[in-house]
Amino acid sequence: MKITLFALFLSVAFFSCKQEKSEKTYTPRALTADDSFNETTKSKDDALKSLKIDSGIKEGDVFVLTFKDTAILIKDAPKPLANRFYQPRFMNTQKTAALVQVADSSGLVSPFYIVALRNGMPEVVKLDRPSNGANDRKITVGLQEISLSTLLINNDYVITTINGRVYPVKRQSESERIQGRFIVNSADKSTLVFATENSLYQVNYKTGETFNLPVSAETLNPRTLVNNIQQNYSWQKNTNGTLFLKENDDDKIVDISEFKK
Image (cartoon, helix red, strand yellow):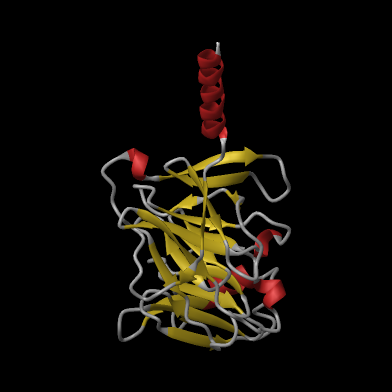
């Protein structure tokens, strides 16, 4: 009888252990210029996975991110422990890197991180650059899709989800994120145009080249901005072959389908 009870106790204890949630907390590091998030794997079991745990909330579905059935938590002091994320965006076909945004009360301005495998083990990289811009609250809108495989994060980072690359976007002033809203990119998708208070600030995120084009308040009117640019400006190459939007010097027009409101 004692043996039977002992065996039953062991079975219950083993089952309870199996039911416990496995979690691991990671401290994020800063992004470096040499970072690439495109590690390969030999098995699907070595990839990151996302699991939906809640749905129907205002900001979107909520997920946990796991590696080998272990939930990934992020502790970025003094921020609270992050264990719930909006839908992760995988950054390569191998699913060894994912862009995540913390699901908290901050909504669109919640922190972004990259969870990626390095030498087969997860690590976390923060996507955060300090900013003291006067219009930060207005222009910080979280994630924007530039194309099907290119994302813009808070005017500060471009992420290409085909090859796991992250490009810091060159600011007008190093102390503040670009004080404008993204409106369009070039035909080769490399030059971004931002409508600021008095100009069209343009930056090629691959080369770091910039061009600031002063324009009138009338041109920047949100209701007519796309039409104004279509009629009066066109993409022109500089001496390096980089495309920038400049005033027309001929009858060229820009295809309106290239613009986003």
